[in-house]
Image (tube, rainbow, N blue to C red; front, side):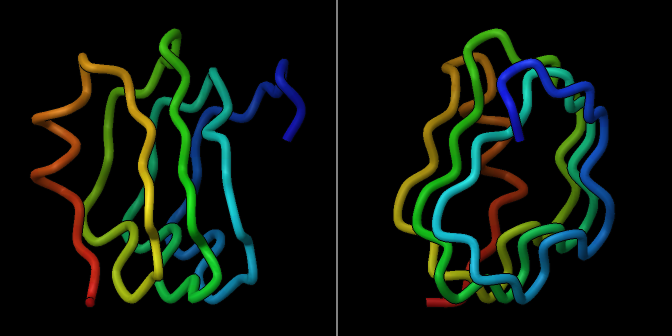
Length: 88
């Protein structure tokens, strides 16, 4: 997605099973639904902008993924970790 993307929501299973290696959450996304990135075996990095409008992160969004790094603003730290689920 380009930096000025108008995307506001990432739907349930939107990228599930994809071969994405890294993903930058667009600035205007306010919600990431359940299992949005589940079973993404190649996914290594997720980045959320400091100016992100993100308000809601649903459960198990990374379930079964091979995520190595999540770059998130400090304001999301504790909230985000409660919803982070990954099979190691």
